[in-house]
Image (tube, rainbow, N blue to C red; front, side, top):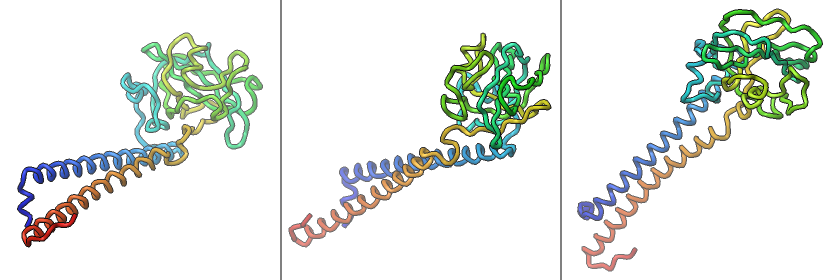
Length: 261
């Protein structure tokens, strides 16, 4: 009854069906992997925000490389180290930064590294308004700073101010704004120092926009996973349905009946 499966037409149909199933399963598995990666990233970011150590500190140059120079969701909150000298002449105060319900500002001091670029290091948070009190001086000479990598701010997020600030203040911590006030290139993002001087408070990890929970993209990946697996099942169902119909038609022909589609 099923000898027709050995004909060239059905052999080709079987090959196409198997290929379609394999492609659907591969794409479904890939989307599932993307979903799991986003879940893992969300957990790591949440752990970093809570102060838990996710991974050992790594040199900043190993995290932000030439192939991947930008801070991503998977590197926000990552423990990094950077070695260089503080450029106190270009220290900046970042106003309108609240911490534990109190108004204050960040103290940002660029750290010049050996390659000539600088890392925007937030040495801590202080209450009040910039200039209301003396800011603790940054250490001189070569230093190694350990801290948590943060994503660049965008205008209007996290207390960022668009402009109109006095000299020595910065509204938004991002390469786009730092390039206007610093005479050298900077790394993407910024680092919240772990060790802060007396008078300052350590800045917690700031989750980027969309990082407060699993992102829409994560659930999209899960949805695509289900779709591809359903497609694979549909291909199997349709193949066996067509085989069964062809077998019934062959049986009707053998009995001299007019097969009905």
